[in-house]
Length: 573
Image (cartoon, rainbow, N blue to C red):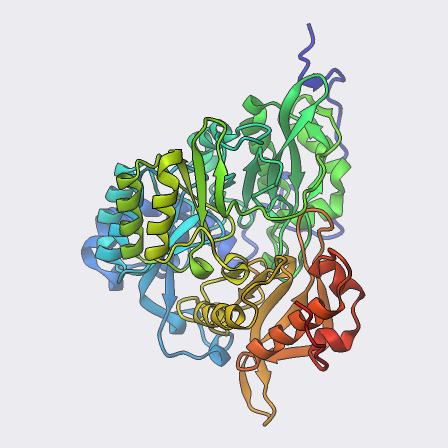
């Protein structure tokens, strides 16, 4: 009897497109090193560096670290050297990497959509307190990110993470980066399907496995069974998105080739239906295509999105089915894209009668001490645990009905509000020049100051407006898909001096009407003028919008002088 999960046609020969010039694709025989990154990976599998950290570098200190490990293979263990203090943004591109290096590390801990127990939250906080000068940021990849880590302390940190089921394996590097999972998986009343077991199985099979430790570049995964598409599936290399087949029931569509940075592309939808237990196999197939056919010659083209763009989604599906799965996937219309919030902030009923509570750190900046305080509250109020979100937020899972009000009040006391302003709820920022060697401008402090000022100027905003602040063109904070996407760069002020500033993207979005926003010719804003600029554009939107018109829709039709802030209309808010 045929397996109903697949169409019945047998696999056939796949005519795979060949580029006009060699691009370093393994499947075509181009396996020789084409750049220093590929040479380093060929010389030694990056996963082998774990033992050197444990048994050599942590005992002999920073000066004992091989440069090829320090600026390369360490990333597979979630470690980057951080930026040396006092180096301004104008020198970011002009100095060699070793000149930018400090003797301390950023350490990224992946959570992969896991429910973090109170003990895990406490461990994450105590690591920040004990080893990271009380740092701990929530990132938009559902990670906790530390700074000021010394190599001597890494083994002790890993031991603490292991004790609560966490790790930093392949949190960076040319590898399967941390997964995005729905923060409300398994509990949301309106969930289509719970994909938790699939993410667990992908991690069990493939993370730390040498079959996938040498990819052309990073490989980002997202999975959600929630109808809000709460993992930004449009911007990942591979996303599994909950859908329903009229005969087979709930399952997942597959989207491939999303990514931002300097060549942004939205993911393309395969329009298929796969069951929960087939997700790891399909993930392996997509990652295998990237490994075998991905472009390795130039780092600037070594992302899956370029391959998908060149092949087209139909050819990509054909190769996936014929060469990696050996079966045809069931076709099914892709699910409709949603409109509205997908961050789960506030108090919401679970399907089991309990509640989940979404809380908002400001631009993802927390601290080890704050996470310890949060763990105290989780234990005091009997909360099952917490999940991180792709929007630098935290969702508390399993709160009894009679505990909600007390918990929300206590969360307010420690600065983690379940009732934040629009600006605190909808502003994200990357690490910025404080620690990142790629950054040109300050982001975290600038974004927090912007939030404070916008809360003062627009305290009762009646519609969501997102602000994403990035320190360089790499779009770690997803600048191109925000209402205000602020890309850090050096600009000229009115006196002709070079100062920190931003290129502005306006009206970007994911979900229904997904787009990369509007850029205005030669339009830059200094960091000092940012408060007034954003205020002017928001005022113009409030004065000029039509009934229920979203900010992104208004931007698409608005006069350029209103978007540049050259003219400010009187707000009718």
